[in-house]
Image (tube, rainbow, N blue to C red; front, side, top):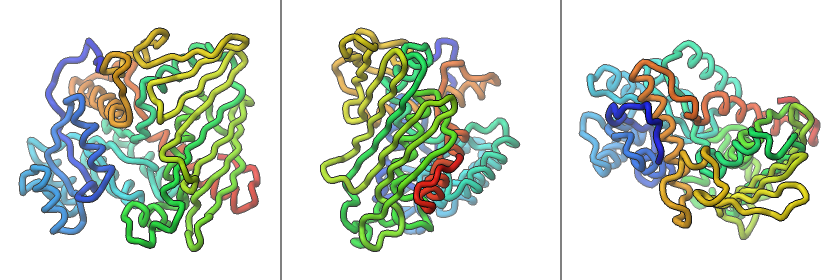
Length: 389
């Protein structure tokens, strides 16, 4: 991965983790992403609230006994008091613990890398935003990991450069099939908390994968949604939260959008896709073929741009690791977010602002995502009434 040439090698960042113990998928993903570009050392964790599981998880990952915690508040206080304490923490718990854990570490001046969606509610998200405004030296990142893909950076740069002209239409979809049946009733951990409003929040599918889709639509197009009309459904009998969402969007400036997210679409695994159309051309990107971006200038043949290939731009090249033809995917995209955060933290160590090209989702993306979820829930409850974000 290409790093800023003006940045000194100031050593690895000491990283802690809350959640992500044995049996947790996303915790392992975060740890792999953090290590990929050699910016972090994983040294402490409150990997579970259960003492036995926390100890076993920490030992399995090679943590020192005194740095295995069962309480994130104790961890934040203890690590802040050590000369070799953590500089950043990854929060990879179910949604209801994101804000309480983030606040505990922010209060102690520890940088936070948090999984999405940001919070249980918009009110909670804004409280965290207010705290960060007070703690100006703390860096906060939200792992909308798909924003780290090189071809997403390519697409964003092309739109910003005016290559598509004035944007008219933005479409996004994210179909999955893993919740087609009542999987949560079998005791499956991931399904259980994602379908529980006490741990997931007001949104089910719309919060879990709809926010990823919405964030990418806004990120690439450079647009901000003003209002929406949503139809949320819970197709599986007895399921409280939505498992399918259809949303129409109106963006500031007049562009229109459509978003479909579903976890009950048989035959789909992680079919995230976005399309952006303007007065001069269009773009199309699929997460399952992340190294390809289709570009169609109006009136001309469709063109395939590949990561690192002919036509790829500097924005994509900066977060590209290997030559074209060698696939980069999910873990590398995740790692790009971690590495961008590392560049910001290392700049902070040196008492300066990060280079202008450093970019990662932050608190604004998190607040916008929660506003999106709540507007969708509100609109759907009123039979799709247009609702302001």
